Image (spheres, helix red, strand yellow):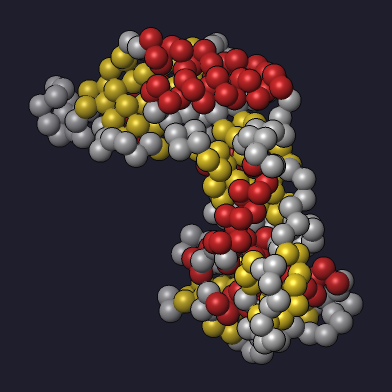
Length: 316
């Protein structure tokens, strides 16, 4: 299995910003010469593009006008120009370099937070809700610790976990970092507010749960809050937890397998996955009841009429 964090970081190295009708994007592009900057900008279409060269400590702003086929250039191609940086952009970049240096020469701040233990009430249908201090209704199920499946399926629980994790009794959203890193993050956050520009500098943290499952969350510089990264959740035995049916299998990724070992963690994660796949509306080939006291695999395949899954017993 590919490193999920690496995949997410590569996907997040180019962040779109929605305050303009035209594209405004940022790239981490070390040793990016003029020709490469022009080519990458032209390929993205009309808009503004910022190239962060951490190795040479330079920031470049490229602007593209026109979509091609018009009178803007002799060849009918978009016009690509380099734009002089403003004082605010210089200040933002310098603050970003300081954070980059404090973070050990990486544009991505990562951290695994302490285990978050939130009791949830299981209903008879297997759905989860926050456990209230008052006595639960007689038809509710037991109270159990929240896990990553709850975070994926129940937005209220997911938001509760994020808020509790990153406030830590109102110590602030970066309480878990060293003082030097915290100061640099704060300075960069202030600089971002003056430009509202996208940046390749990311804060991506793991929020773990008592069963070993986890989700990843990303800090949004513009709204100053953390949010769940879709596709980042993993169950207690390492399987991807899909957010929707298209995340199980699709035209680009035709198959997906989920492995559940012969262990208590495998049993619990497998039963939750079967219920989750049912909720997402997959079709089943054969019974959708997990085998007893055996490891098994759930194999899912894309079809034009929807995803179909099958449970396959593994050797003991």
